[in-house]
Every structure is written in structure tokens, then in C-alpha cells.
Length: 130
Image (cartoon, rainbow, N blue to C red):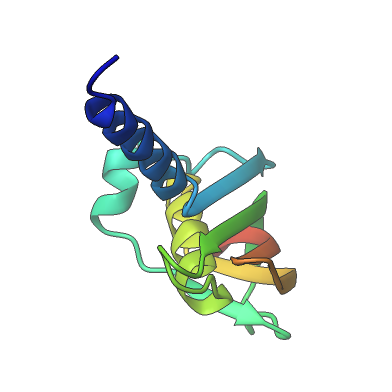
């Protein structure tokens, strides 16, 4: 018990690692409505372009593929601020590509802050424009 410094250092390192891991968190639920265009995740990410529609709908006809609900949380001190156009769009793009979509309709979203965390909660529809 003479030298407690290594134990104290390990405790501080573990606390720091836990704080870093909670700096950024994303939870997403995808309810697939139409799976005829669905792709493996590696293939979907390779060549996928996605348009975003907020407060508007595409002029051409489209098919509904999935409903997506996503929550992004970031710690101001370790990850910056969570925003719809950056973090949420990136997550929606990834999920839309996986179901074979080429566009996202933003149904609703909320950006908020609490303590040192910023949050974006978004409800969207993954679609395939024909």
C-alpha cells in the first residue's frame, strides 16, 4: 500500500475512457417497408448518392422503402455539437443506401441541448425516386 499512484492512474484512465466513449452516441431504428432494393452494407456504401428533402417532396414518383428514427448525441467538450445537416444526415444516408434508396424525406426533427450534450432526434422516410 506504499505506492497508490499506479492504481490512481488506472482509475483516472478508466474514467477518461468511459467519458470518451460517451462523447458521441447514435441510435437508429429502421423499419423496412419494401425490401426489393435492399443491398449488403458494403455494397451500399460503395456508390450511393442520396438527396434530402425537408419541407418538400420530390416532383417525380417514388416508392417508400423504410421509416427511420435516429437519435444522435454528442458531448460539447469531446465531440462538438450534433446537427441535422452533419451527423444526422450522415446516419440517414448510410441507412437509406442499405435499403436501396436514393432520397430521404425528413418527416420531423428536434435539435436540443442538455448539460454538456447536444442532441438531434430525426424521423425520416427512405425512398426510391423513379
